[in-house]
Image (cartoon, rainbow, N blue to C red; front, side, top):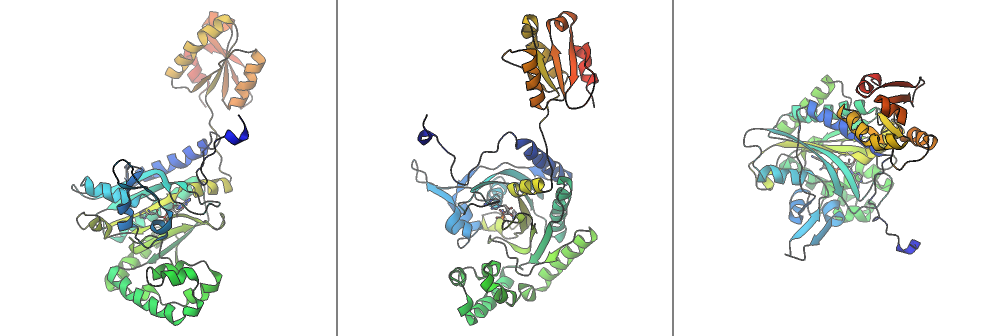
Length: 420
Ligand code: HAM
């Protein structure tokens, strides 16, 4: 087939190849383990949701809704659909639709692909994967703290150090409305310094101007009024208690007054974990409280709090820290000779019934070529089945990853012989 006819994946959409999956498994398994240690239960939502869900939750004037959604109209029935750009909205929809908080609070988590039509660069893809976590019907800062501490534990277990925790409080809606007005007035007074993006956002989403990475606007944003100074008593106490809980748990944090997050549903606590080791896309997880979203999406008023981890970024970071993982089957079953070839399939099955992972050599070939493949397979042992072994009802075991003598043993003894 000519090069021209070869199909390629879409820009920003990637294959995860077998050589990478062992490290992915390590990342996902560790996340699963830690989440269950904190009592979070897995939920699985659809990848496709109605567009309206994200307009009403993430917000009409956010980057995601304005320009990053893979949205289309279903030709068959005219429904306006979208590949989910994030998981919180769908999770809230499911909680409301299935009345999941009927019997009390819920701690939920999910894993899977998300889709955003962004500019592609290191750590920024159009299909990427998140582990997300959402707690419903808890209003105290203890759940905010629990989720942050859970993440600190996860980084530790993954072998990642030096990630900075940034936190802020963006208050409740009325506090933010007061602040919004102050901010508009402030930026209007300095209109000459605003770039195009900031001018566009001034009356739609002025808080996001604070997130600007434009060097020309840094001094202006630093000197802007602070939301923290507009907080009412309840929001202030919530934030102070969160800080105390984190300090008590030994989790260091930095208060970043300009941290507002790019999604509209947040109130009070917002946080991000940031590394300097990945270049421009250094936020490996982000989240916060969203106490009004459940009601906005048709449920009863239910406070909530959550976060999502960008798995590709964490994967890259694990590699930066030299964390490696390999898939290593217990046994590569070499079979040479007519009787051995005929018997190999059932021998492999018997070993698997004993709980071992066995790669059965298929396709014949000399002893030497089969042993080469055994070496390349990453298996811990080659189990050699020749006609002699078949007659004796045994196999010869040869260690491949460590030094050691080849030994013969009965099939039922293999599992004990290769225990490490
Ligand atoms: P987010 O900040 O939009 O929050 O995304 C969370 C994380 O997903 C980011 O910190 C980043 O690591 C990763 N991420 C986002 N976009 C990309 C991309 N294009 N390529 C690679 N990684 C990416 C949310 O999604 C919220 N739903 C989090 C949340 C849950 N808040 C409350 N509950």
